[in-house]
Length: 182
Image (cartoon, rainbow, N blue to C red; front, side, top):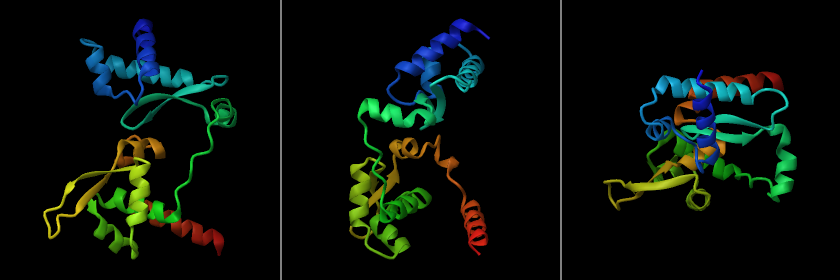
């Protein structure tokens, strides 16, 4: 393992203002084989998980970033004077789930899935930048089409949409919860 490459990758992840994607890292490190870059990131991530470290490298939003360890959350928030994340309402979560699993999707399709009007929830999700408008559907009225955003991945700590649980996994979890309640 090239320690200089590892130190350079660490510095690049540290200064990046957004998750540093493998493609962006490779573009910056011209001529360095992707396998060596990946090995450097994996070594850094493993080292950062060691006990006694306050930060670690995580994969989120399609790239790598530094994050404080969850055990230090309360003190970090106090230092930065950050209030707890405003939680989404159940209507917001339902709307976000409908978009995440059925995207690209229109407002009327979301409302049909939920069985209620979703206008307010869509506005909230747009304000929080968890979803984005990606165009218009070629249908009567040319309705807006919605998709999840990169902020959605960061908000949920996902690397990609493939990390969402499948419908089968969700059904299994719900069955297990019912069994525990019974």
